[in-house]
Length: 171
Image 1 (tube, rainbow, N blue to C red):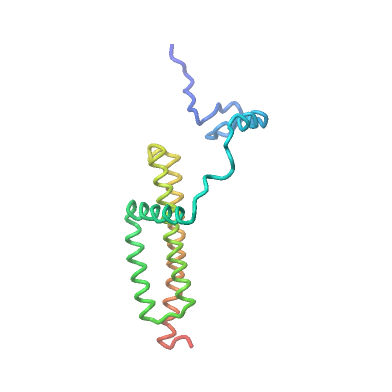
Image 2: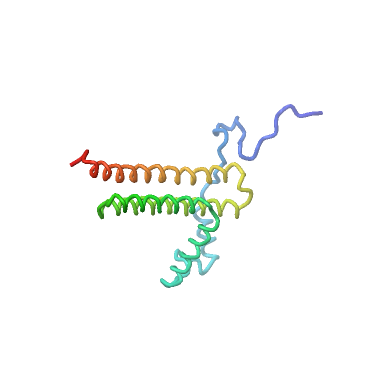
């Protein structure tokens, strides 16, 4: 005999239980159990292993190398950054405008590095096309998009303002 009720997906709890559909059930928190687990695990501290400044610098350079080699977007951002620097140099922008342009470009690179880190973690965890990992990757891509548009706005404002000054439109 065939059961007429559809099988329940592990993510979707029983709708008759009163919980919203699509939410994972959260187990009750047992503080005593957590304390016993922490007592049984000596050597667990809140601090990670200490590294010196040189080791941190080397790890950072290595991470930057992995990010640049793993994503072609860095080449595109580098190309745009060079073009913006050439135009800014030709227009003769002041030091505060240079600060804004460098800060905007640095934020784009930081967002790309974070996006690369999320992508790398998604691939390391399992199938990067799994829906939850896809959502995480798309959120990271959205962060790059927001920063890139903001950086573009800053760049346009700085360069157009300086061009308008040189053309005599603004005193």
